[in-house]
Image (cartoon, rainbow, N blue to C red; front, top):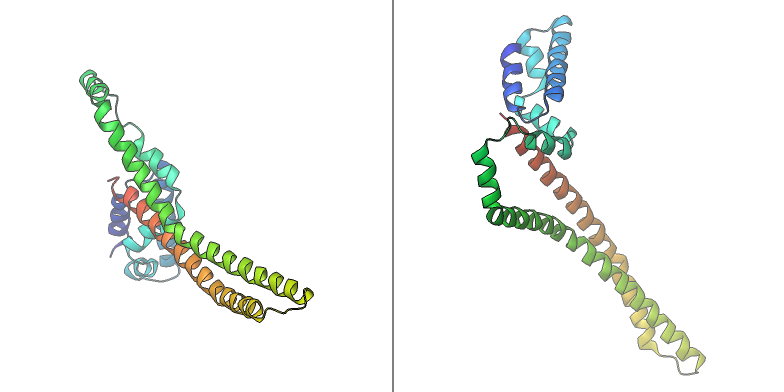
Amino acid sequence: MKKSEFLEELRSKLGGLPKKDLESRISFYDEMISDRMDEGKSEEEAVSEIGSVDEVVDQIAGETSLVSLVKEKTKPKRSLKGFEIVLLVLGFPLWFPLLLVTFILTVVGYFLIWILVIVTYVVEAALLVGSFGSLVVFIGSMVGGNPNLIALGSFFIGLGGACLFIFLCIGATKVTVKLSKAISKSIKSAFIRKGN
């Protein structure tokens, strides 16, 4: 692929970026390709070393804040006409609740992903508290002169379960963080790509 083709395709796929960021990114990749060509590489080699346009777009999506993308997407491109304002006002009872429900469902869905992590840590805490409660019961029974071995066994079982369960907590946290990053990146990519 030629440098001009690469930059033109990149410009069209990054249409959702703010204009200042778009020009900055295009000039960055233009300079990067030129530097590689100055090192003696052919134009096609220099472009192929950077990667595909889609890979570059995904990388840029990961680096760009969602707030700036939303600002750019919601910035009015032109002023509203009189009939459009009337339609917005008259349609408010219909479109606003739908927009609000969509937003709430999106936020709730995102938080539901994190519920698994919260539940695993609550179970971990319950295992620890329960096992140490059993230890207190065992110590109390020792003081009373009638040792309760079931309480001692419960302490060891609870403590062992807590030691094993912590690995599930850590694994659930790692998976949820990766999933959250993937969701954020896909949302940002959709904003960037829909701008053209």
